[in-house]
Image 1 (tube, each protein chain N blue to C red):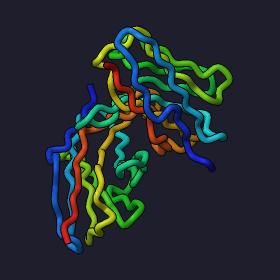
Image 2 (image 1 turned 180 degrees about the vertical axis):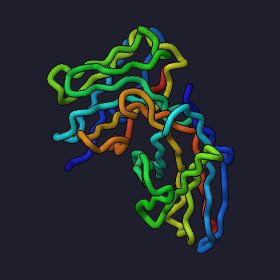
Image 3 (image 1 turned 120 degrees about the vertical axis):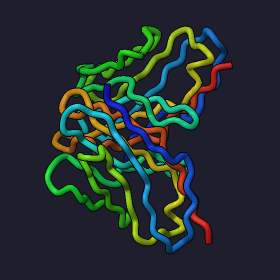
Image 4 (image 1 turned 30 degrees about the horizontal axis):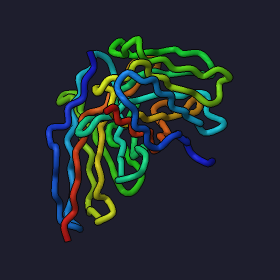
Length: 114
Length: 114
């Protein structure tokens, strides 16, 4: 169990640019989640995959955000035309079947949009 | 809509003293409730969870929480705090398919004084 891995750890970009983050979950976990956390706030749910299927997506999620998990293993989160309000820590988590709520979180990708 | 309220933004406790962190939730049915801890530079870690049954649940690191339906609360307690407990604590409630998407509170920062 090597834990949930996220890359990069930090990303600085200019407004209007596209960015992509990667998450490698724990290998036997079939569920994968993306959350966003800003300073002084708790993590905010973005989207959830079971295997390669994206089963839930937050109604608050802008259409500039897209996530994929093509082979049911790693996942990518892309933000198009970034805005300063996108600056946040993007967290990935994974869990195994039957372990509802026991999410294993990665250390996150800190995005700064200038 | 489901929501979680953590009334205390910051709490300071003396080492060895008891601790109680408050959490109130809003949810129409029987909730799935969780407490997570986030230490500086580390990912969120599950402390304990409540799905059903015994309303007093035990977790890791000596923490426990009590579910009180009548008060819509799920307070976290520890009888004797250690300096290593200093961290940010998040209460969360499950929603979506079988409680998959967690809704987090804004968190309580715990400081431990010697």
